[in-house]
Structures are given as structure tokens and as C-alpha cells.
Length: 170
Image (cartoon, rainbow, N blue to C red):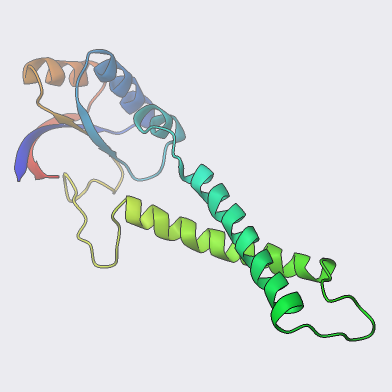
């Protein structure tokens, strides 16, 4: 389903950040921001804090517990070996295995979680407001939730190089 959107085109990310703050203060519904590179100030202002680091910590704890349980079961219960007089359960030899398994499994699960949450998958068609959106300009996409003339005026006052109206599928 396509909706009519207002798109502000900016050459400088500082002007875009200024326009973003002004539009947010005035209650405009900002849909998305497109640009040639990531701007951390814009990301902090636009997107809420990600919960992925907390989930990665949970993945790491679960991996350590699971791997430790598996190593203990294998070394002590299922197949105990007594070689060179060492005890069945020797924790120092397991530290490296636990460390490497934690990194491997946590990284893999975090990537899969990120791709699932953002609905990215191979072959997915990119939805862009303009074919040149990622070249060298920043695009600020807004809904027409109230007077579009005010939004266009605010964009022009904030330093937008161009203001477009397009129907975009989101």
C-alpha cells in the first residue's frame, strides 16, 4: 500500500539533524532517514536504544551454562578417562573451550536475532525513496500527518536543498 510522503533532501548531516530536531519538536511524524553513511547523533535522536546487547549477554550466559553442562557430562558421567592421574573433572582445560564456544554461539545468535528483527534476508528488495538516496545526500522522509505546507516550510527553513512529495511503499 503506498502513501504520500514528504521528503526533505539535505547535503549536510548537521542541517539534517537541525531539521530533525525542529520537526520532532513540532510533532511531525518522521518515517525514516536515508544517508550515505551512519551518523551517530542522528541514530541516537531517531532510534530508541537497542536491546540487542542485553539479549547477547543472555545468549552468552546460556551458552556458558550449556557448554559447561555438556563438558561436565562428557568428562565425568558419560565417558570418564583417567590418564596420568588427573581427576575426571579438570576445569582449567575447559576454560578455552568455554570461551571460544561462548564467542561463537553468542555472535551467531546475535546476528540471527538482528536479521530476524530487522527482517533482512538474502534477496530482499530495498525500499528507497529515490534511486539516488544513498549516493551523497541525506533524505528525511515524513508522513503527511498534518498541514503539509507547514512541514515543507520547516524543511526549507532548516536548510533542505529540495522538498519532494512522492508516493512510497513502506
